[in-house]
Picture 1 (cartoon, rainbow, N blue to C red):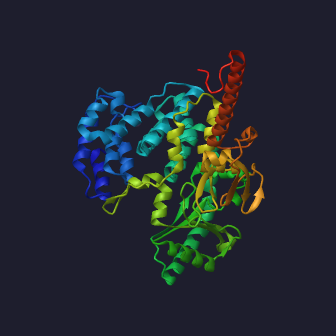
Picture 2: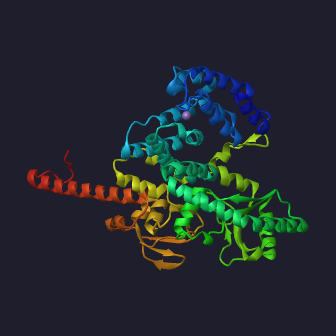
Length: 500
Ligand code: MN
């Protein structure tokens, strides 16, 4: 399938797209890569075409699709970024240049890991679209990994599992994260991959009969009550995500209810709650299994209602209820902002504090494992939402403490912190905060600075570096003081004259 398939996908999703320009970009890339072959022996252009097709399938705008077609051009051919800019404009050229920079990593081992992370953070801070195209690139590379030598296969798969997938997760791109994980899991840990795949097939075929019956009965009830259902179908859990859950549940698959879940998509939020009511009237809910991620979204923005109910023959089934918009956000996360919708391109990105923080952090040079560990804690860990008494939300890594919270508000609040109330209870400063806590920091203006002992329990990079830098600056002040006193004693300098 050549460029026609790509153009058809774009036309279906977006009738007003400039197809001529896309065709032009394809011809341009095809000419630049002429004669080049992939490891599989196929002509090279099949790769950028597959990348562009994926971007088109998830309904992204034409400038990203064009950048996808051109993404390897400056890397491997005689064509330069300047040529790309002349022909396709500065927006496309800057995306292509960002992707090219991401590709150039020469190090090995730990250094490679650090460099990889650093470059990706720079790319995200610069333009999230670069990262989205890079994910599409990586997905196709993983799908065609079979033709590479074994050591290269393993390296690319491991990198995808440890770096790319968590970043996709943090950007809320659930579907892409799931695909990256499943494709790389197969090469990183083939044994466990086989084990979980087999387990999943067995378990879902066993449950499928009851599940389909449950679905039919529930659907009938939806019709009777007149709930406008957009779609209602089973969704199978991704292999790697099931593997992680199996490990958490001591490998007891019977305790995992969402291997196959029933997903309901309805037009409005009110319909979501109405649908939940109908399901609970029909099937008895399992206690403590109702999760309202609509009123309280997960920190990556995920929204849905989840419930588990006892269905036919007492089988437990999980239902996930959401609107179409929530569904798109759950699957494509931040990428949903560049999707083509009803003739208008939505480009507004919510203020995402951690992306802004990246812009700061990328300036730091990571030297050792410890720096990476800190960074992993800040960005790859699960996040919690903690509230100020005024109702502002602060986004923190799991197990963050009131000190982390104080520094997330402002450096001064951290430096002057003397105590805290969590949900109106006086609490110690090393308490692990939980999602939904309301935290009130008590400050004392006369306090000189942070307690270096806090370093033992703070979790965020931000808090750590500010406590350390305060300790450093107060130490240098102290040394300077001492020095000037010594000088004064020696030279008998007048007190108002500073030593130069
Ligand atoms: Mn590529």
